[in-house]
Length: 225
Picture 1 (tube, helix red, strand yellow):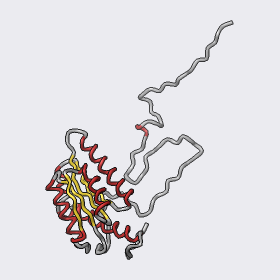
Picture 2 (cartoon, helix red, strand yellow; picture 1 turned 180 degrees about the horizontal axis):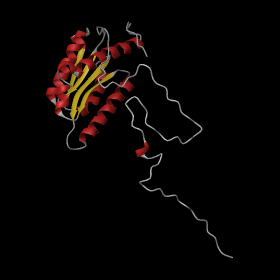
Picture 3 (cartoon, rainbow, N blue to C red; picture 1 turned 180 degrees about the vertical axis):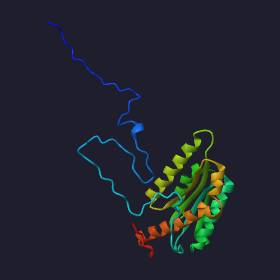
Picture 4 (spheres, rainbow, N blue to C red; picture 1 turned 135 degrees about the vertical axis):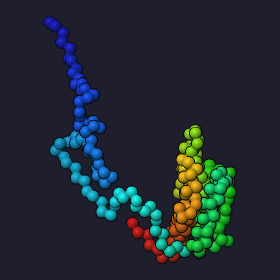
């Protein structure tokens, strides 16, 4: 009586043989189309529906329409870093000018200065305790260097500011530039593309939203989804 052992047969495919799972068999697609994916269930044919109003034009405007904003009832806090001071000062200047244009009383604006962007979350947290602000704008600038320090700081600051906003019910506006080069930072802190302008408008809108939800003010601008 001979012993028969079950044999496991493995089908090996040549690396040069085309497969429905191979990248070589994927169809090239435009920005609005979907890449080919192998159908593992032949009896099921997924339907892809288009989304109206969404285009993939590369030159589409990335701006946000804020409409007419009235921040006369707001007390706004600003925390800013001295690291990359020239860039931060330009952002701060545009931010404060925009707040005034949105009817925020300069006497109702309070500022904290810290050494670097890593200290922004702690300064914002202190501000939620002591200054009775309706919103906070955190301004800083990080430029990538040769080590991983940039990624660590950027992630810590992002998470810290988000946590403070959620835990305090006070909107915290993320005004930290995270750029790969100094040229990118300069482009985003000067002229019409100065990001401080949009940060200030966002602060006014979110501050008014906060007041409206706590029954402290009436906001005429509707929030549409």
